[in-house]
Image (tube, rainbow, N blue to C red; front, top):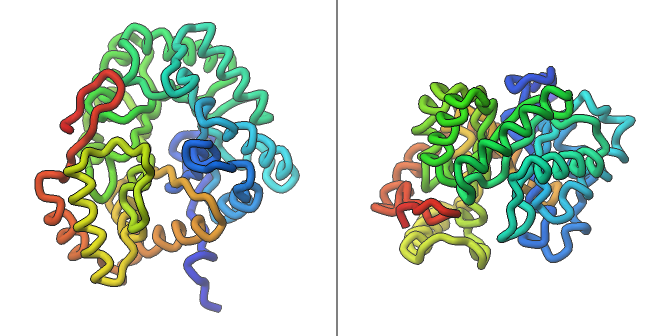
Length: 330
């Protein structure tokens, strides 16, 4: 009997270690009002059940993502008989409270994690990141990471991480934290390993030297930039990059290829670490899985299109934008 792409299962082993994290992780940022006006109406239960059934045995969320943790916690509680806690990973984040409010104090971080555990219906989180570290000073980040290390000793956290956008700043902070005796185990960056930007891939050796065990790629579609549909209005890309993406969209349409599909396959094919994928329907989830298996197939080659797209970007390839207190190349 022939197994279709969407029926295939990721070769994952949920053993509690970072090495056991699957290649694809279900992103929880979509359960937030910034992406959806009604995140409560996303078919979360069906999506989580389907993801776990296909080996995507990990979710990524945050205290900052509006109702995301509450929604996912309700789903996990509903599915607990089918999917017991030890059968999947929970990755969440602390420190960012709202768009312009952060609390990296010991009290703030501890309270955030305790709330996350409560609404996610769990006694521990596999991973907790200090969220969007580029907005804060190194000494504040140090306090937050130190607090997570303390909670790790208490068994409430298994691995400590930091997340954010600027790759160079993330790597620098990992080096500082290593030298301070509180190294991070895992790093998550977004929009920096996609069909426009490979800075995260180019920095893997630096993270490894800083003691980081796992580097994850978030938002392979660069927060909606890399698709044929309109980019979300909140996207910070400069006009020069938007114009370059418009050329890329025209090219992929001429090849009868959806840019989002090509972008997913690029990230899956080129990045050796895990990727956090945000979807809002079961159909989108299945499409992401199909693109994963196509990217891993030796019979499918997108390299010529990858090369043509890169040439269309010109000097916009690897261009970044300002985030937090760090100036990018925009």
